[in-house]
Image (cartoon, rainbow, N blue to C red; front, side, top):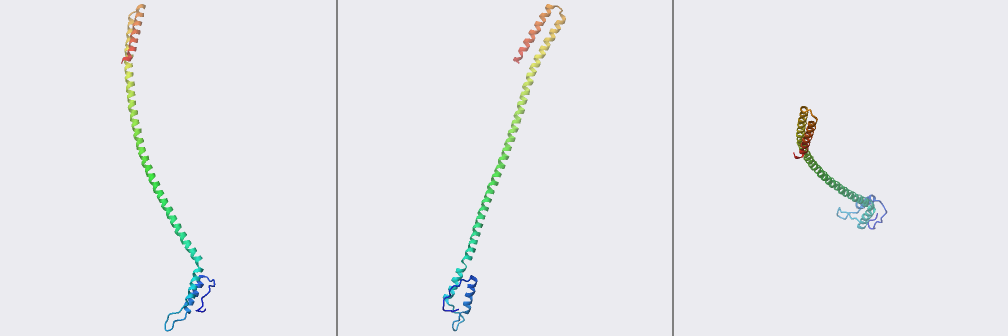
Length: 185
């Protein structure tokens, strides 16, 4: 290779171009009285440009993959954050529902207890009322039984028919008046 002529690109791959650049630097003549080399600037820059032009596809693919990876990771992080947020909201709702259910159960138990207490009280009141009415009826029945017994006793003492009719009328009147007095108690 000539050190004065600019190099023409030959379509080599990046690795070959870099090896050629290294050879150029190694073979460059040294400056007089110095250990520094003299490299043809145009030739070196041409090799660098050719190397840059030869791997843009590889770099582009690598950069694209890195960009895709970053976008994928960002999207995954966003989705993970959304899932975590949704889980928190759902957990809060479940806790609220649990508290609502507990409070509803407490309220239901209180209502049932109050209803049972009220039912027992009404049952006792009804039983007391029925007992009072039966007691009043018992008194009426006892009076009626006494009247019937008196009537029978009179019948046994008097044997005559006219007296018998009077006794029946008296018993009937007594039973009717006692029966109708029942509403006054």
